[in-house]
Image (cartoon, rainbow, N blue to C red):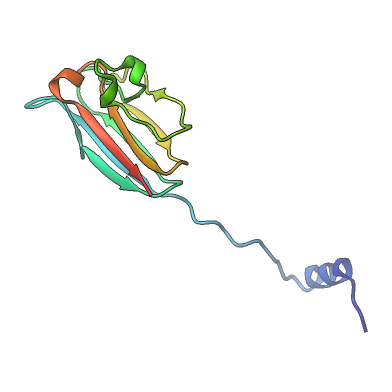
Length: 129
């Protein structure tokens, strides 16, 4: 006896059996905070994540910051680095309690700056493996 796929699916449905595709694992979210004292800095300054993970930056203070992955906006272009083929991106101005999230889909090392406080050493790194 042969049973066709459609008939088999209808049989399962009539029995109340539900067949679903396996769920794909979701990436994790890593948090980075912006600090102002004793100098501007990203905390932590370096994070290691996997492809598909998200980084969320938060500015809890009253001083405006940015998360800038664009060498054209950096004072020193070499302070920003992107893997080959990745387009530059930027959070824009982040005021008090502002957040910015980015999901990383390409492996490599990403170096970024706060374009307002780069000269003070406000730089960070995301390593995606």
